[in-house]
Image (cartoon, rainbow, N blue to C red; front, side):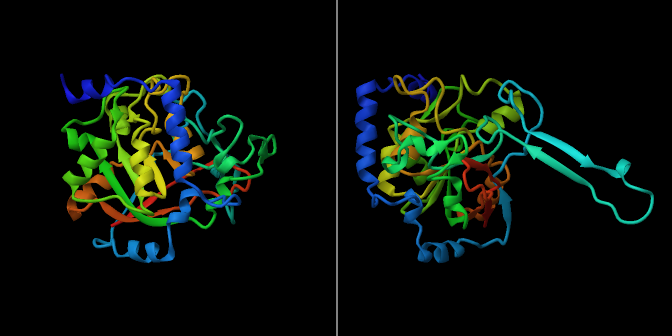
Length: 315
């Protein structure tokens, strides 16, 4: 039996097991009742200064996938890019401008985005017990993406699970376990710690690029919910992936997105979904290091449940 088959074959968490895990993680993320920053509290000014020391090559790499405007199996409601003024609208002399507009679904299964702490409602509450009713038709009154309006800057760490297993990508439905994360740390000679921005590669984007789009809502690789216990112990500040973190089918009975519930709702972790690491991996290989300065700048959306995002790694 292959490692992938063993991972997929792990039993799903029962409803009681998941609930116990949820309660344990909530107890580990005990900030004051008024807190609205969650795990971002782990990043200190000293951490930001230290992260600047990760820069050795003077090179930058985007972690974002291009915004897509075509209908595909994983993108039934794509972004709409519309030109509102072109050369055809301009005169033959004098000044004119090219203008356009963009409309998009922030929480899709293709475009890179960051989830705010108001994104996940579970048993009637948001992160830190904030009532779910604070998310209204007018937007999020609490825990919106504007919490991160000053940007998120820190030490980024990429753990490459397909590299660890010697495969181009993880197969659909495969789980990344805590043991995988620890093994990747050892193989890449890096350790994830307090205040780090952790990025976990499962190869979703490479599989999509090489084999074409599929219905990712029904089948994808991701983290097993139990892996969140390790991340809670390490006190990471942000979690990102080239998938959306959750495997499909779900690894927990009765909960479609258990990692989202545990990360956002229980731990107060901002999640970055559907990134791409094709530009970053070669730079990490060149530098022979898997840590870097990382800058994440969400849009200023005061009532938004998330934002399109273009994280930048600086090596």
